[in-house]
Image 1 (tube, helix red, strand yellow):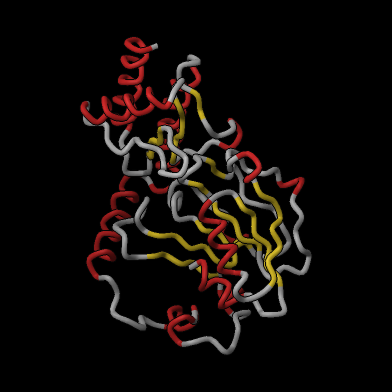
Image 2: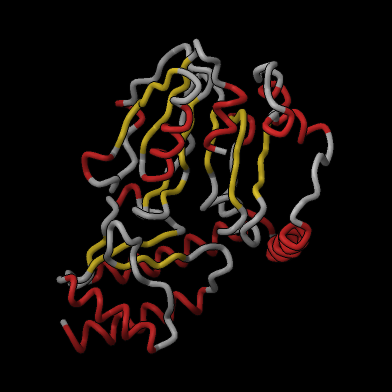
Length: 279
């Protein structure tokens, strides 16, 4: 999708604006530059992508065909609190927080999301595209890369099992009360975990407080040795996959839609015990 968005909508003599808040937006920018001009409105790379840049300081090209942003940054644990307010259509990589909270769809030209966080198993990707934005795509596109091809009909054999599982997840979400209901649960889980991190100085969050993600909670202990010990002992207590992304280290708890409150409560209880023994 990094490639396909620009391939469809960025003319060689045009410009698109991107906001750089981590690895995935960096990759999206690199792909877009294959096709046309890219204006980077803002970047949080100066502080290791630990915050979402304030929109007040963005440098947005007025003639941009779209503004692209990554709504949640899994590696660094940051997330946009609100959707950007700009005059051009929004394009969003919502892979890691899609279906976790309501979106104002009228503000978007296109939203794309890999299934593997909140929607279903890897192998499927969701793309939502407004018809008026779709009509602005280039005319010389290869058939398979043309969003119009896939909007018109089922063009190729889909990953049937992945699509089947997506349907099951959507029914589960609907039975819970839909997106507004899961938003409440996600906020409660994040509040509990961030509350524990902030309670003492033993744990320290790595994302700025006003940019914290409700999906990926990143934090550290007083030393890298304690980080490693925490991860090992957590695994022995059936708390898995808490190691931070390989390029940044630390601890990362991913609490996507399917993560129950009981799992977060168990992690918080373990954090209490670990600090009591090692603090």
